[in-house]
Image (tube, rainbow, N blue to C red; front, side, top):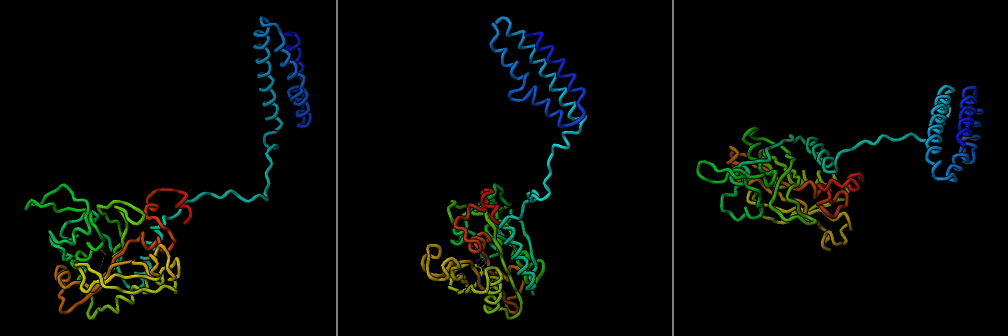
Length: 341
Ligand code: DAH
């Protein structure tokens, strides 16, 4: 058996050394190493040898096979088989390079920025870690005012000289209203987009961290008509020409009068569905005419100037725009969700 193997080895190596073309090489490969090749069958026979021989012959056979395979590979390389082997079909569609894209919230945010800059609004930013003053006090929400309960937040373990906790994670982008008035004075048109925080149990419609857009316009003779025109423009550009809005009275201490703005439900076209609680209308944002106290906090004389302000969640706008029924999806990092945008 050992002799036979050695003989095989020499024969095969010699023939491989003489090969000059690919078809001959393939023939040899099949003849010796194919499924029914001579060497393959011989190796199978080793299994029938008596146990004491099997080990030594097996070892020899494996060595020989490895040697032949190495030689085969070398010859293939010499003949350039590896290149010729690769079939390239130029008619197949190309492989698309996977590129990421903007998060749906970023897309809506950018769209809003475009809408408001086109109406002459500046886009402003403000700190997420905010003073109690700008977040509440300057918006006509003094300490112990019940309106604070509506916007419970995360207080920071830091006391001012009077021993009061004076830093909060901002509960709304309205906190930038007085900052903007102080910096730019009147007349003023600005939109503030950014992240806000609430001490909130999460559910389908609530998050503890989300995004808002705040709009503020201060000028002479600004009225509710201006507010309506700007909001109408925003809704139509965001949702299409068919959308209608309506106002209802609402309470926010930094505006007087305050309103809640509703839009016609896009999901049922106003017929009534679970999303609009069968009313055909969905509450979308809070707004109103800026309270004189807030203008005063911003250093603006309410006898000369008036203004409107509004604020809403960007998630809420995106949910309506794309028909999404769970706010938690936005921050879940779930690619199945994100890849749809
Ligand atoms: N800041 C309010 C909130 O987060 C929303 C809001 C209501 C903003 C009325 C306004 C406004 O500017 O006038 O719930």
